[in-house]
Image (cartoon, rainbow, N blue to C red; front, side, top):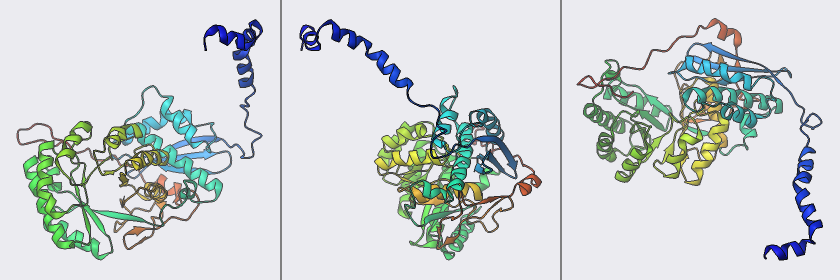
Length: 422
């Protein structure tokens, strides 16, 4: 239809006047949208105070409300505790005064209203805030957080346990002991003894990994899955050599085979091996995960609920991965609070394959400040049933336990004295 016919159809200049007035009408309609939500049935409450609790090896978030409900979250990043502490101070002004029930709004506010965004400090700080908000929401509703996330996608979560032996024989004995306790998957890496000497050599480490892998597989047989952790140590060509030698021992997956900065390098590895690969503990948002997911460079993604922006962001990362049939193996080296948040997310997310046990399976887990750890039956963690995250936080115990600055990462170097990755 040409312009002349359109004008005739609209009735000439009168219609033009009406057409010209449309934006004003729309503006008037927009102005009628209520911004005062106080009459709503869900009563509004307010966040009155945010605190950071530095205790032991952990960084916790405490959020207080005018309803008398307090929520707790775990923002621990063992490598950057002071950085996370500073980031929390920067983010609290975006949280105080808000309604804690608006979890997504507060998450977006903490991330998008900051000009500089992303990275491990931001990811961990927002994670602690997000967990505390979910804790509050669960306590308000009188139900576990996993119920608010859509309910149980599974009735328990399979766990894997870490092995830290300094020799192949010691690692194999640990694996055998854990298998006897009903644990169905173990993860190991070698070269711990080299870390103590600030030394890393690709060739030495590759063959030491295979020595450990062979001993562990012989100790546990075929009924226990063995995860081969590389910690991002190798250059791609040495990672490929590791894959070649490891294949006969059938690892469940190879974790962090190379450094995480360049996904294109993962593409090269993906094209040269059919071993299952995993990466993700050093990713801190869904944007960090996007390319790896879309290009399907890995079989498993490993976000950490304490580092990636919390429960809210882990749910989104999982949904992105689900589209490509990629399962999650949540990273978790946390105590009872971070483990609880990881467990709630893992129970509600459909594409979680297995979860790192962290301190859950430790012989003497630290429970002075937060408890309990979940009950474990035959290597599977059962749901925590209390309201919110289902754990208790002893503030008096936290006040008595001084914060301990972590030892810095090893200053690894090669035989020629050049820097190597930790």
